[in-house]
Image 1 (cartoon, helix red, strand yellow):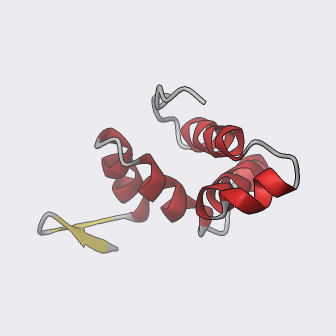
Image 2 (spheres, rainbow, N blue to C red):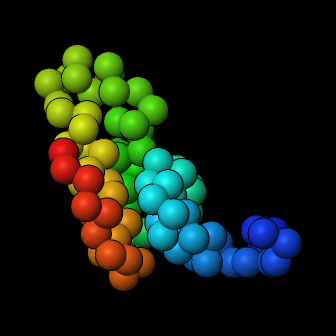
Length: 88
């Protein structure tokens, strides 16, 4: 549990608040550390890694922006959130 706006909230409630506020980077960072991400694990963790170190992924010939957006899409799918609407 974490305190948010003076109230204790669960990690999933924190995710929902970040997502609703359009703070997608923070939402992806939060979720990438969670242990149970199911089939979305790789996309989420790779999306956060590409966000923190885009040059590495570009050097490997991968589009870091696309990986980031794939990570966001995986978060939205995994946690039943509205798609963020950010174009890659």
